[in-house]
Image 1 (cartoon, rainbow, N blue to C red):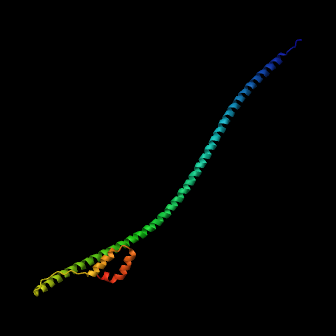
Image 2 (image 1 turned 30 degrees about the horizontal axis):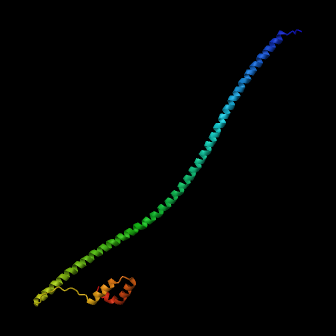
Image 3 (image 1 turned 120 degrees about the vertical axis):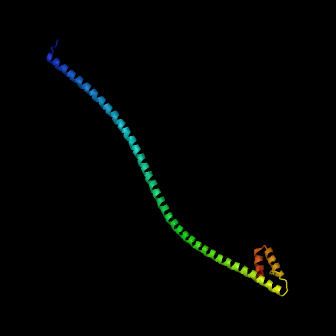
Length: 185
């Protein structure tokens, strides 16, 4: 049995075979492209996962910075309130210092006046002593410097008072002998 094959059929078959080979080759190329795209897609997905993780980390960092900023704002507000309070306190203290300086000046003036009076009294005492010496000399008496004498009893009372160490006993002694102690101190 011999089959007669038509050369046109052979040509059509060859063309069909070449077309199938070209389609197969094109299909294989498309499969390689699909594999490359799948590899690229996996890389993109992996990058997207890393970027998403990085984005979450950055969001957390931003939230932490917001919290820090709020805390710093609260501390700044508290510090400003404290500064206002201290400023008022400083103003009060400045006024007190000025008052004390005025008092000091008045006391210094008073001290100078008292010192001048003391100096005047000392001068008058010396001239009174000189007059007394002159009067004594005019009547033939030799002048003697007089020193105030404390009574022996008062001195011993003062010594007794000083020797008492118990505060309650000292207070009782003071109350009992107050008049004598004050008179001779």
